[in-house]
Length: 145
View 1: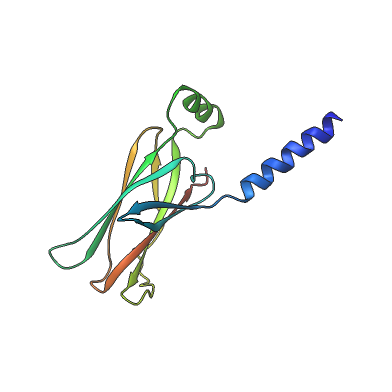
View 2: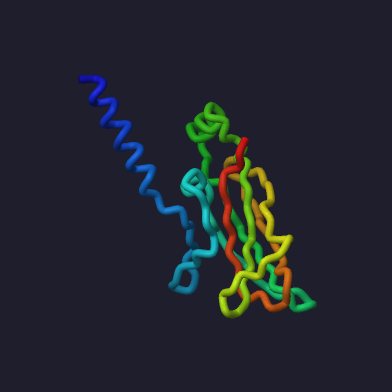
């Protein structure tokens, strides 16, 4: 009987984890901004706080994302230490698009490494590879240890 209960709990946990949405969004001006995409591991650990964009004096679009590690507090710190999730090692990549939504492929759009400790704020920044870039998307996932 205990085995059946344990299997039921495990099956429910797997089902719950498999149904997670992995897009973090920031509400801006009444709408949602979904240019920040995470994996299931980081979905409840990183919070996208802000997205800022501007043009450089040369006319290139630049972007900065403010991301906070929300795992704070005594229990979260203890659990992160036990499971080896403190600090988080993550990888992120900016993908740039032209005004028509076409990907502008470049060597500069490669995966970058970053580390973020509980309670810390991380700033992800990038400058567009071309003046024709009009938008971007950032993908971030847990780095392989």
